[in-house]
Length: 197
Image (cartoon, rainbow, N blue to C red; front, side, top):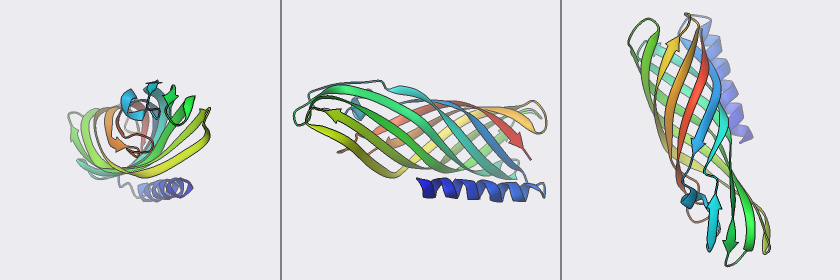
């Protein structure tokens, strides 16, 4: 995950350096609410309950090649799902599943006015999942990572030429290791402040 964060910082730095030439770079930061399927993230096989939604954060940066086409990279994290139940091997216990990751996507933009535009994106989510388990038969941590397709739609309203707000829905497909930590689609609703350069 440290390597992924390094890539994000390097990409954002490159975009900001290009923005000095007025080529359409932007950055954003916001809050996000992520929901998963409780049945899919349960790690106990006899009985299991899970809190399937949590609020986290997102940071991103992009570069508009034209008013209609951009490439974007970002990092999302802070999503934790508490789990409790009983297991045939582990006994009764509790767990916490935390998901974070880096994404890169192609973005299509449809300006509807000088201030408002719609957008759609498709790309790859490089996820990292940490599951901490505390049970009578086991106490420890399980770490998994992988890549999943993602897509999203949203709208941007620009208060000024440089400052706007983006409201977006994204879906991350098949996050997690199915036979270890559980595999689920994650629905993410976010609102972000965007600065254009």
